[in-house]
Image 1 (cartoon, rainbow, N blue to C red):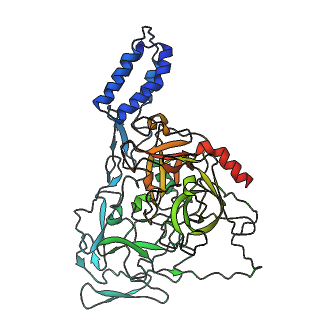
Image 2 (cartoon, rainbow, N blue to C red):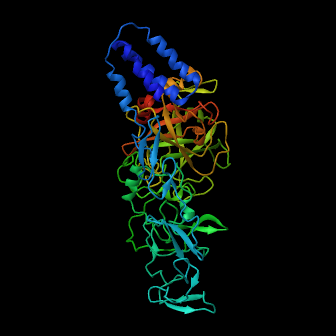
Amino acid sequence: MLRILLLMLSLQTLTQAAAEESEGHVLKIVDVIAEDPTPAANDTLDDYYEETSTNNQTDNNSEWLYQFIEETDECDPNPCYNNGVCTNDGEGDFKCECPLPFKGKRCQTVINACKHAKCGRGECVIIDDKPFFECKCFAPFQPPNCRRPSACNPNPCLNGGTCVKGRTRASFYCSCPDNYRGKFCQVGPDDCYEGDGASYRGFVSETEDGHDCLHWNSHLIAAGISEDSANTEQEEEEEEEEDDGVGQHNYCRNPDGESQPWCFIRYNNTLSWDICNVTRCPEPDVTPTEATNNEFTTSAPEEEFSVCGKLWPGRVAPRIFGGRKAKPGTHPWQVSLQGRSRHSTNDFHHFCGGILLNSCWVLTASHCLHSTVEMQVVLGGVDLEKHEAADQTLAVEKYIKHQNYTDIDDIQYNDIALLKLKAMSEDGHCARETKFVRAACLPTGPLPDGMECTISGYGVTEKDESGSSQLLDTKVLLINQDRCKAPNVLGNVLDEGMLCAGRMQGGVDACQGDSGGPLICRQNGTNFIYGVVSWGDGCGKKNKPGVYARVTKFIDWINENMRST
């Protein structure tokens, strides 16, 4: 980077006009060298300098160059997670100073303070203060190291329960008052959950199969944190405003939209999870009203949801789960497009992705659609092998391919299409808005190169139908169009209806998503559908990013077709 800046400063011999004309070229060359710091790349800059310095006119006005140098700040925005402090190293890179107990290039990993802890008959949990761990003893073993048993002294039973000693020093049971239950009489008569249990704040801490719940801050759970699941500063601020009931305890909760409260358990020495033994609250008495067959209760026949591009408050915190468990509600606009041969009685199977735009319209790729296939969409779920409570299944009434869609040598042009869903009620509604089913926003304009966006799906493309039953996601970067069109990248086959995104070094690609699936970019707290997974040259190859239909180029086409149909 230092060599680049010195050479750029020497370009002051350019005329003002030449400087203005050359700015774009210099930026491109800087991009090339930053991506490929090899002698060949440096020769490219030498050739450029030799060519441009032949101009004999001079001008000392290099304000544009200094402005560019001043704007090059690897710490803006802050790349460090968990309140890490970013400093520039002077060589075009950055360093994160991580607050304990975090470590890693971006402070994305929790230090395993429990690695050398001696907790005996107890569980080691991660805490915020030194020494960053604590032993939670299994009764009747006592702190600090959970090795000395003391049954009934002190009394572990709650709510007036009586502790009864067993035959050994480490055995006891609690005799609970009427209407109380649980190993420690901690579960009262009003301890129950409503709906899916998202609001449950009771004290049940065992599963239906009798397994004891792990603490939510157990080191076994914290060990799953990765760079992809670490939180940005903005996400942490948002989560501080949310209350999902998860904390430094082992009570059952439902922070992620499961069918009822659950918890993590240790089963066969591996981390797992299970539904909890929590009682459902009795249904309140409701005065009978006029019967209706309509699934929707909204009076006005509107296709639009209340708001687009917003996640439902109270979603699961990814820093806790580290990708070990699917997170319903994280990609509520994700569509599973499923099909079978027309007039067949076979089961539907997932073959492409899509994006929900409003109650009755889905955006997808033209190359996914065939007239011989009967289609349906499934919304809300995260596991193709389960019939989840959050699922909504709707038939596809019709589809509209872009009139100029073409496929030339496996390169798709104008690869965008709309699906019209079949209404579920007489008032014209199709999908129902829930915390797991939301609409993405159409973009209002271009987004900057280098912006980090998200792709999601089940890993199914037209060349690989195996994929995953679990919903996947990953981060990609928007890449400059000229760089994508370079001969050693994708060449001049790209047109203005396409964009590329990924990582030039390879490894991350649209293969992690679905054909027809979403490229979602978040700006000012709103999620925009910026691209639709279209095609690529291989999967995760160096200098071969994924290619997407550029949604901004099709806004008029999308709106006109949704209005006219």
